[in-house]
Image (cartoon, rainbow, N blue to C red):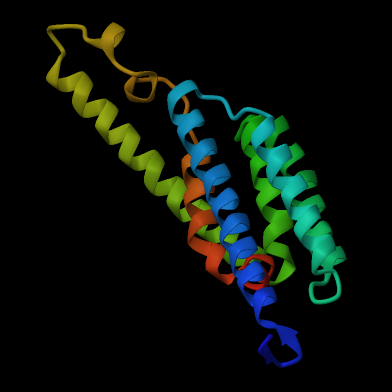
Length: 183
């Protein structure tokens, strides 16, 4: 068997397959959270729990190359601040759980940029949905289509923030150390 850098050739193929699988599952969790929140205005607990469990499995595999306690600290900080934000009624519990799960993956180094991207995308999403809801209401003023519209387009509904959280997670994924190691 040909070796490169002391590793058997098959090991590189195995790591590449593992990396693709881990990245694919990460992306699937992000997309599922966004879709569920847009559709039902809920993020199933299985999504942040699965994302967190996947983090711990990957972090334990590469614990010698990743400062795992810094990643755990980032997740705990986001959870604690998120609990206050939830109590104030700014974000829902599912949003906070999803943010916490992604913060485990992001760690300290990229946490600020990730949260900034979430805020920018969330603000843009909010403005877009408010404008779209207003336009739909104005267009159908004489006729009331409210009963036939999806919830996301109804005036007065909440903003499904997991769309911004998931999009920011997908955007920052190539820069995450654990996903880079897996690839």
